[in-house]
Length: 348
Ligand SMILES: C[S@@+](CC[C@H](N)C(=O)[O-])C[C@H]1O[C@@H](n2cnc3c(N)ncnc32)[C@H](O)[C@@H]1O
Image 1 (cartoon, helix red, strand yellow):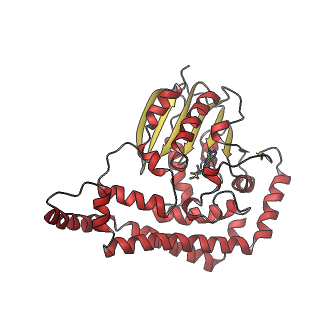
Image 2 (spheres, protein in one colour):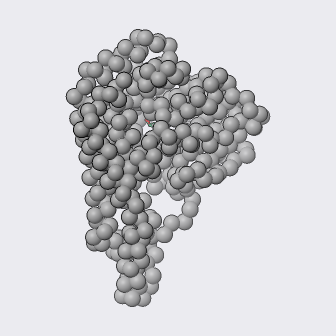
């Protein structure tokens, strides 16, 4: 397994990066108190309470605790990727050989599109500072696998696989209980695809993603783990599946990484490829909640410094409305861990 290719010193370094991120994430209450102290001074000086993002900048930009927090979060992320890219580059030949061997050993489960044109909104962004973004490096799959693991632990304290499984298990199944074909949209290296197969072992499970390097690694991992899933390279806003071909579709943390207009198109595509009575479930950031200037400040910083350039439009996006505009019924939302699960059913 390629996991074994990460040396112990590299693993310890990555654990340290995740630990730094996780423990600085626990400063939230102290940051909030620092903001409140600053807000009282602001009010005494200005004769009004702070009410805008601009006010929050005036209170927090020079606050040492906030400065330390932001630097630790950013630096731990940069260190994480640097170490991951070093480990990947050191064993580039082994990784390429492992992916090629999996493709030869188990053909017919990985469908790449040699003519695929990546849209700019995706190609040009180094999401979460991942060097080369999701698709520009041939080793992006391995880099994502190792780097996201450390990053996830830094956010939730849970291993990525365990965290993601909870969302797949919470996604609603179709009301009639019939699940023969399942689709994981924006599947990356398969963390959300494997638990779908585990949950519906008799169903044909597909994962789609735009990134060929992610999908090649996803296929390698599935073959290594003996998981029978299919992967295809396509844009979710222009799927090549026929109408009415899935019983259930799940998208985990995809929507906040795409422009809202693309999210709206994907909603219509999901409606088209679901069979009547099928269900579409999206787990992602909470949206539509009124935010305090302090919360806006923290989100603005996080979206910019750990690049997620479309997240601000996403949190302002009427996602439940988008379900209804596409034709879904029984549209609902419920909290799952730190995120929100929304779903809608295609009328039978
Ligand atoms: C944050 S990752 C989530 C991956 C996976 N669901 C998980 O939780 O591990 C979002 C994924 O969506 C993919 N993606 C982004 N835009 C897409 C689009 N328009 N069509 C298909 N995949 C897309 C990215 O390549 C990335 O792998």
